[in-house]
Length: 494
Image (cartoon, helix red, strand yellow):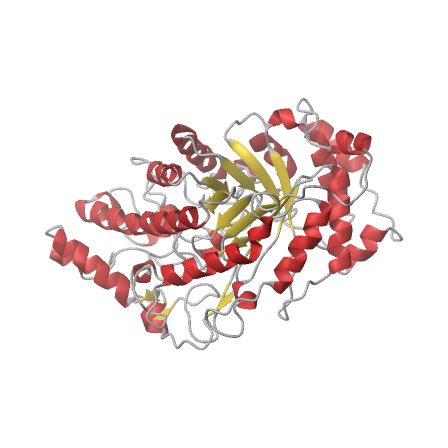
């Protein structure tokens, strides 16, 4: 059994004083900072879900299970795709101890018996670097890594988000964010070196909000249940404006560098509420091409810097590097595709914005994580939304550049007919490397969900199983897990 642990980092800046106006993404239109738990930073801010993805693989499992049982439950290796499940967000406490240890142990055994190959672990940077900047304490995560190793396989993940314009500015006591990130990676590597190559086989590097390569252009992540605005361009903090001005002067268009687009909607507005994203609007003008090219190029440069850093740091280990790209599917069927533009992807009906992204991943020999594989066009409340078409476009770019893809779902039971959609995306596509199902916990092991997940995993052994058969299996297996079972008792506490 493989266990891929993704560690999310929730990082505090410790005692360093950071002014919101210097580092935050500032909205001139609203005359305020767009403040979320990952964007604007002061001495009390915590960075969530930093981006290291690790896969832990034990030389020998300490859980004794018959080979016959394992063979009957394991997903066919001939399909060339691995299935993972995310561990609880709070697996390690603020005190750097393992939370819900018995529940996690029971859950690992249950997943192994089912044939799931891996788990994903959220790691919070703020727990690791809690006492002082540069002082890292990994004891809780080391204990959990050893615990997972006994069940068989594991991983980790860490990420941060600042204004992209400060990547190489010495804002942390003379150090740049890239240097701080590098030190964190080096500390991780040093602490987990005994696991590298045998237990840890993969690392997922967080590239922005929620670990994804994007600007924090939306107040919340996209889902299939709500109509979303177009988001807002993140170019209004002083450092971004300075960068924009320099770029405008260098290209001979000084007047274009005085600020962001004046006619673009704000976060929750529709594309037609202003002129920029309308058909024939500013996005199709020479100015629009200038601004969108600059805006997207900064994002790709940022991603390239971090993936290159990771590849360099872990080059002498036998691990695979992963990075996550979002599925900004709202308004995809419109010509301007505004949700993608504000997030930093210059992707319109006239231009493929993911070619450069896939090429950047290929250049760094990294694999791409794509979320939303449980979402289908048929269940979108927005008529112009298309997660399926966008996913197909990104996968096509990856296929062209030889980049392997790892999939994720949006959340437990969040999408109608989600298991059928996941299976559709998983099977028959050679660029798929693995799939991580989000996330273990009380809901995951509930009577309303776990029987369906069990049938889903079993169906992966039967590529010819139809959707109707899967639904019938889910209904037939809807009985709850016995209350006196060890797994049920332990996971209810998770």
